[in-house]
Length: 92
Image (cartoon, rainbow, N blue to C red; front, top):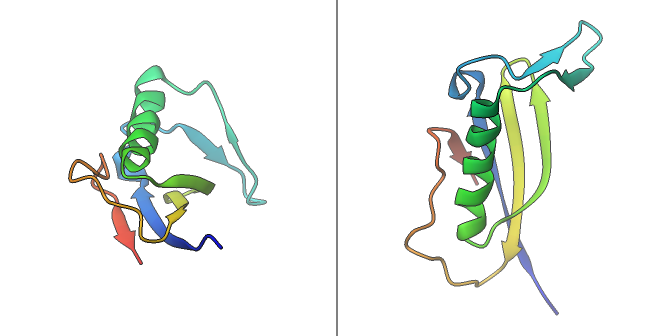
């Protein structure tokens, strides 16, 4: 039976130079004309974790930034090149 480990990473809004998402007072958020440099920042986050065997499970966007939920098979070998590509904080 496969077992998994999970991690959550926080990517503060400061990671993104321009606002890439907008949240209304009702808490609903939407993407609006995301600048290409912001897409690149998000791709870097995804690819950096993916190289370490992590799969994105969910991502939440809020006024303060992004909260990403990742999983990978437990006991998977970690590549020394695994990186978080941003200065986001990681919690376990």
